[in-house]
Length: 439
Image (cartoon, rainbow, N blue to C red; front, side, top):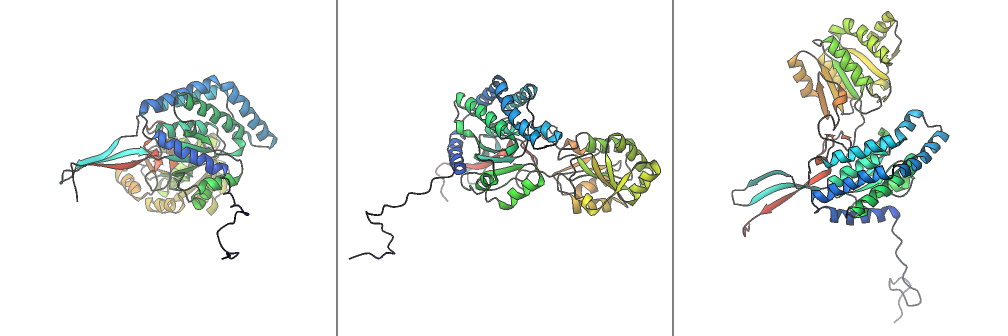
């Protein structure tokens, strides 16, 4: 009997089509998954040995890394990239030495893998333990700074994870050189080289593939500007840990020490304005505005900060001979990352809370006050990863919190919130031990 043309059976004269070749992105993800299986049961000594090998290799091959980095810098200058961005892109022997020292500091951190989070003996005699285990394969999508390549890789390895690194095209030569060094060092230490891989490709397609590699990639962590983070959050079918856009606020309460308030405000804004924990808005209680605003304007002006203020700030600026730009609604939602700050006078603490809850990105808020009850009320009404009482917003940082290095600052509400150290790069497994128990 002859078969119809619609039959799925293929005749000998017409060989079956070969399956399409796997894309390079999925290929590296598959290798990372295999490497993660090898990494998970390794003892701390094996992982630490790999990190020490990385630190040594960075120093030994610094010239090679700097040469590759020079290629990126030349392209950035030819493209008219601002010098501030070029500085973030630049690697020097001194900076590489500092990165190597940071790797050694990660070695000294406590090992999260195997930590018992909680445990008990159940009434039926079963022993229950919740134990930290590696996440598996962690994908990092990040911009500009090639030092993140090493930071992310070493933190992931310390926590027993394989890592897929997708940096920006502006640092492609630098990242390629760095990952080559990292892979060789890891392999020399007896770990699978595929525990550290650079995601191939410089265009957006490779990022899209990474975001769709569910089942091969366990979690994605985007680090960079708001556009990058939101794109990954919206489009990824791989679970995402959302890191921090920082529209941070400082509220100066009626009972604040004015000298302390000025110091905290200037430090929060001007100590390093280009980072996510820098303050972007200051709110001042109306009861002290006439005394505080002139002092704040003088200090902010001296620090080179431009104020985008409401009517009260504009009047104070005119009286002090300081130009204050009229604030718009856009200013309240802006993460400037520059020497700019939005400023308003509010009638009371409740108004400050309402303003912050409307405009915050959920990163860090600060209150300056001598009133303990006001501080408690402010803290209880905030919905951010960190709330500072009489302290600068700049303290929201893994190193400052004593966690050691951090992979980023998460502004979501899942298992990782705030500065993400090594424990946040793990999940948990429940281990139940019985003696022939049946249910």
